[in-house]
Image (cartoon, rainbow, N blue to C red; front, top):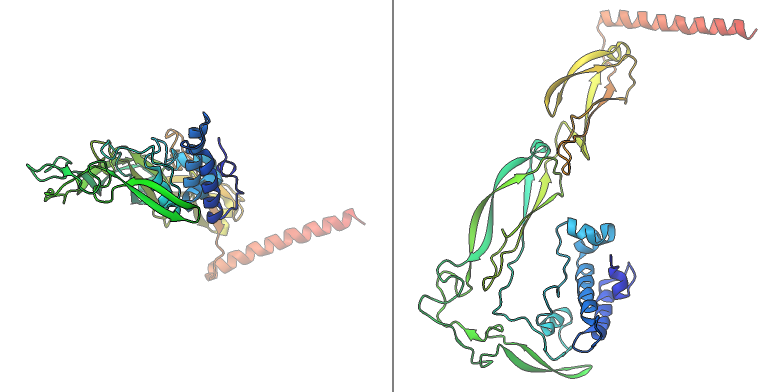
Length: 372
């Protein structure tokens, strides 16, 4: 796997300003319109991927801990900003640095070409048992769908797009910028038609000329057994609709599990506490406890100590990667000393104390005889 810090030539504790400066310097070197080396385009794309990751706090933290595979497993897009081509590089650099690159605009994405829709995120809260065993949930999302009235054209029924007068239908205009590096002439996207070359003077009343309309949609989502807080699910093509016939984006569901008042979860094991009396600890006992599978009888061995555990194998949480495998239910024993005693209990405890004291004295006497 490529090292994003090495690609940009910065240290792992580099600031955002240092990362931005390094990217700008390296981008000048490897821009395909300037550098004609066979690997220039590939290196330029790697620069974009590294920059996009390290400038995003959440992505950078994930990358630092788990690398590029960790980004993929967390549901992040790891293709970088130039994965599908360079698009309008001037606009990319303008968004990064405020303009001044002026590479000539030889490459740009056709704004009339199909474009993928945006991804969406939904945070879903589950009860503890729902997360353990899985559940089918109905969810509602607000997303953009292709306008059913204009079929995505943005124009009112019977109306047609007209040639943009600002750019003469080219979708591009020439712009000269004065910077500390000199004057740069840029070919930029027309701000009136946004690169399409046409404008809609009679827009669709339902979508206001956007071609997309926000709609609420219901979905049934099957949550697998064993999910935990932070688990992510991806529903392909359930995000916003694409533009110009492009595919829809994806919907990412992020799981949040309510804590249980009874169980404590660690991985696929669950822990509970069981209070027993000193007599139960000394003599052992059989007790019924609540488990994820209902009530079960467990055996407390005689002589168990405070803090020791009794395990119920296979009564924990199913593994999300291997549902047939389950963790354990770990019962942590706590011995409760009674704060108040009845007269009968006092007599019995006194008798026990005397017996234990006699045992100690007897042992001491025997030891005296041994060491005379």
